[in-house]
Image (cartoon, rainbow, N blue to C red; front, side, top):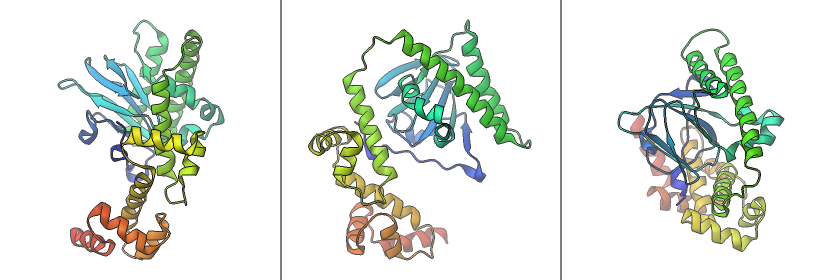
Length: 288
């Protein structure tokens, strides 16, 4: 089941726009999770496996998986099997209208199987490896080079998805997977807009379904209610705001989406076990 507790955040260090690693974060290994950024996974050995929106993909060397924002996925490595992990903001793609319009199509085909006899497969793998080589250098305009390679990669991915769509034009998407995807999109929408006066009507309208139908589906697929999910997302935002010791608690309450300090205090203690002032005091003690 999708749960808001499986949300994965990421920090891009030193002002960089990309993260590149050869290891999977152990906190999310074998656990269903989702995130608001794009993640490219390249299997560096045989026997790894990735699940995307409840579809299992056994991976061999050089097979690729692309997890788009809101995709429910889990990663399992075989033995000492390694994977190349690339993460970056989806805005780097959606800023281009053509790619933005194609995101729904791209997300339908997250699995890119490596075919050693196909030049397109070699090109995809080569672009990713050049991307990682550029990441490890200190040359001038390194990220410009990386962005160029990334766009070249997604140009080929887009063309490949178009070909697959043409070949599978008669296929009908599984209704359950569509619903799962809708719920993932709903969670992402709520998370991104939790500081606004968001209502159940707003979320249902965004998904294009009735309020009662949305509430039922949301409870079924997240095992929590819309209100509880929204409240916890707001508390997460509040916890992040506490990192600034000069920010007043009342400002944190309103900036994280609460309409009153009393409702903020109640929700904060219920979820964290601490009052806001005690939480700040604990943070200060941890830094000393």
